[in-house]
Length: 182
Image 1: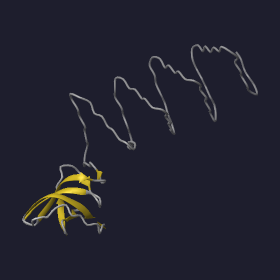
Image 2 (image 1 turned 90 degrees about the vertical axis):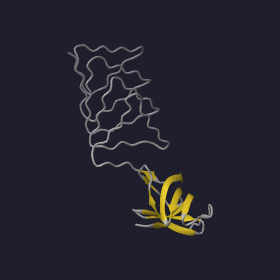
Image 3 (image 1 turned 60 degrees about the vertical axis):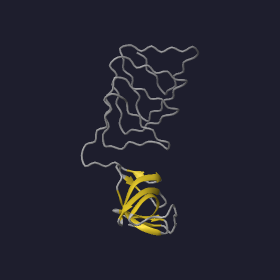
Image 4 (image 1 turned 90 degrees about the horizontal axis):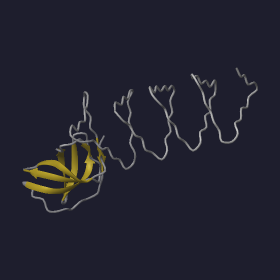
C-alpha cells in the first residue's frame, strides 16, 4: 500500500549526476521511498544500517549519483524502527549493562517469560497484577510491610502453618456466622 503527500521541499539545488543532502519523504512503498529534492521527486532505495520504517513527512539524508538515489540517514523522522529476526535474538553487554528507556511506556509480549537473577528490585508508584493462576514459592522468609492491607477472596481462604501469631495494638474483630476454635 502506497502513502503519498503533495508537500514540496526545497533544501538546495541538486545536480542529477551527484547529490548529497536532505529530502522530504512524500511517498512510501515496501521497497522504496519517494523523496522531494529541490523541485522534483525521486524514487530512492532505503540504505540504512538499521530497520527504519519511514513515514510521509520524514526528512532524510539522500545521496545520488547518475540517477541512482539512496536514503542513507534520517534527519528528522516519526517512523518506527523494527528489529525482526527469523530465529533467536540475544542482546549482550559482557562488560556493562543494558538500559532500555522509553518516554511513552514499554510492553513485553510473549507466551512465556523467564527471569534469572541474583537480586531483583521493582520500584514503581503503583503496580497492578492480573493472573488466572498464581503460585509463589519462597524458601526462606517473606516480609511484607504496608500502610494497610485488604484481601478479598470469593471462595475459601485457608492458612496453614506450624504456628500462627497475630498481634494488634488495638482491637481484633472476627465476624462470621460460625466461628470454630479448637
